[in-house]
Length: 356
Ligand code: MRU
Image (cartoon, rainbow, N blue to C red):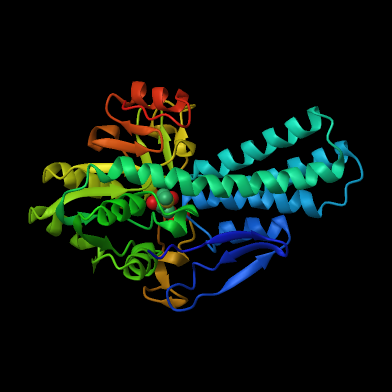
């Protein structure tokens, strides 16, 4: 089945598919400067929390590789500037900070083991490639755990794009749907367009269509109607940050979808890797919500659709844990109470599966 490739490390640099141009054009750029990688993350050339984590790791690797530093101390100072620049791009997606921390940790390990400058540079590139490689296995495991919770046939709903484009693997929410579909479950996906950036209409519809999975595109204000008809068997979405108590930030509109799901007795699930957990914060009140440009609301692809008025654009909202039936991760399925199950999964060895 077709799997989109949003990012790749090559000898020429970091190659990213420009997701702003999909589905009309498939254009990729090669990045050789970490500042340009940061700009690409900020401007949504690449988006989706886990894919942002991969881009951040590769941004660090390209920064270190291209650095002209002649001592480990000088390179360390540059590394901190590189990480600060990348950290300022998308505040809600915690995978960004996870990717940066992982690269910093690896740098320190290389320095502590007395590795020379050239080997530090190549070691950092290898680590970024490893971060990317792990995404595939992670998503496949999430898909396997989550697929069991999908209906054997009928409609399922998602939000935004939590597919291969968003993870650099096979996708989290779409990975679950894909795994269930490959098992023979006869699923039909309802895809809300996801205003204002239209990740549903542009990206999820594109990925599912390419993968041969049946879908129906709907507008965001049709969500309640379709849930009320009683023909949606489950909802599965991705996440940008999951607090210690299970409160989950995801694309704006997810909260309303979860509340409507409860009202209509439709199970609502989150699919996300452990790297999306933020157990340092007790609840969703502590999740920073990215405020994006109002122009993304007043304009669609550069064309003004509203008068010149004030417009708001919180890019994410927080779904309280009480609306979430389960969280699918690569180490197993977390169930309420999340304060216990998430902690247990985060501490579990990577290769084991723990049902929370
Ligand atoms: O603003 P975006 O497109 O980066 O938002 C993406 C989402 O909200 C996804 O659902 C989330 O990052 C999970 S992706 C597997």
